Every structure is written in C-alpha cells, then in structure tokens.
Length: 373
Ligand code: F3S
Image (cartoon, rainbow, N blue to C red; front, top):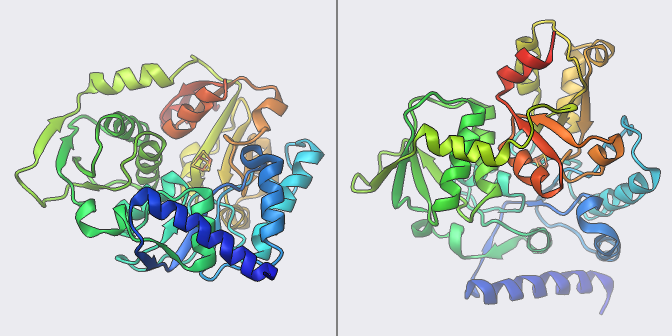
C-alpha cells in the first residue's frame, strides 16, 4: 500500500470505528472540517509522531481549519521553552502540509470560510461546535481530534446525532430573567449544561453580543453533551419551562471562582476577533493595566489590531497577545510561575481548575475597573 492509500485507510478505519459507536454506517458529505489536537501540550510526542507520519502523503479534501497551538510560535513573546516551540512548530507544519488553512484558532467562524446555514461540517473543538450548531445553523457532531482529521481527509462524516434534523429539536426550555452579561451567560450555560441531556431553548430578555454568544457556547461545550441550543425559540409551545434563578448561578460561581485575586489577566477564551479587541480597547478608555493582560486571538485578529493600535503603546499598557495559541492548554502559566489568574471565561475557569490554577472570575467590565488605572 502506498502512503497516500495508507493515510486514507487510517481515516477510513477511524470513521468505521465511529460508525460502531453511533450504530450508523451512513455517511454525509461535509463542506468544512475543523480539527482540535494541535497543542503539543495536549498531544505530546505520540501525537506528533502520528501527524508526522500521516502528513507525508495524507491530504485534506475539504476546507480545513485548525485549533490554537500551545504557544505563540510566531515570535515567542513569553520566552517559552525552545524545545516546546520546536515541537509545536513541527505539529503545525504537519497540519499545514496536509492542506490546513493557517488558522490556529478556536473560532474558525470569525475569519475563515463558513458554509451557509443548513450545511454539514465536521468540527472538533467543543465551543466552536456549539457555536456552529446554535448560531450558524450548521450541522456537526462534537468530533474528536482524530475523527475530524479523518473527516477532513475523506470529506465526509458519520450521518448521526446532530446531522439528523429530528435530533436537534428542543424538547425543553429554560428561562433566566435577571440581568445578563458575558460572565452570567457563561454561568447559565454551565448550569444548564450539567442538567440538560437534549437540545434546549433558553428564554433571554435581549439580543446577545458576539462575546456573549462565544461565552455561552464555550461554557456549554465544556460541560455535558448537548451540542445545540436555541435562544428565544418560539417553536414548540408545549415545552416545559424551567426557571434558572440567580442563586443557581451563584452556586456555579462559587465552584469556579477559586481565588479573590490573580497575578495576571487572561482574556480571549474563546479567541477574540479584532472587533472584540477594539471594543475592549475602547472600554479601557486610555487606562493601563496594573498587571499583565494576555489576549488570545488568531494571527489575523492581531494583525488587524496593530494596524490601528500602536503595539508599543499596548505593551506599555501591559496588554499582550498570544497569537494562534490557547493560554489554557499551554505551558504558559507554569513557565511564567503564575498560579492565580483573572479571567471572564467560564470555560477557562473550568479547565484551569483541572490544571491546578486558581481563578478569579470577573465580568470584563469589572476586570477593567478593578485591574487598570
Ligand atoms: Fe479556545 Fe483554548 Fe479557550 S482553545 S476556547 S482559548 S480553552
């Protein structure tokens, strides 16, 4: 078997194994794929060796974006271990060799090809999956790094679960009638995600900003299995409506807020686009942070930002960018010697907890108010 056949054969075997899990042999053509499993922190040497081998001949047959890396390899602003950077670059090279777009982001819907609603895709990265299904009306299961890779090669996914219309119908509804912001919405999704096992509707009092949508999708993606929800969907009026109370969210907050302060600020989980960065800088209104603030974003968002804002000035304000990288699945904090962070992201708080980092969770407005001058 030549290497091209071998790559296709591996991809076929991955999808066949998944067929057994879903009890479905049917496949569906996909328009795009989004692959996780890019950070060397997550996949280690065995992942790197696998990618090095499969990328010798394996080629993606559809538009394929890839998740953030474990470090900003573009200029290693934070002086992370050179060995880590070297291995991370090798992983990136392997994906690019197979035809991935140089995206390195968990928000592939911001700058890259987004098929029209109703199209089927194979996305890994739970926050993007929930966002794509819920806000873009794409059809995707929560793929794993391997199944998304296989789908990217073959251009198809298993026809199951979220690809089937009837599995996406909301059978229950939640309402929350208190004031909302990006943090509260994250806590709300986290709370509901622990309880709901099927797609649901949430009744909210107003339209959401892009940051708020990302926060909701990311928090829901980090907990439970639900991969699609609706907001203010008038659909089935017979649905049972459960009310979520402020005290329910306070409980979630107590679980995730494990520190009263932090040594640095981490923003951009999920990645911010340049408009979200601009809004944040406007909100800063000329103030400077009293501690370092790291914003995770893709390279394009960074480039668009520094076309408008002077990078040296941002440095002076202690605002730095972690380009094409994820500050959570990264050796970043360990290497900086940081054990407590401030963030507005429920998803970040959820995973930092497992990584032994304490978190001070605050709404973005509060972070600006209390941590800058
Ligand atoms: Fe993105 Fe990393 Fe958060 S991949 S959603 S910045 S955990």
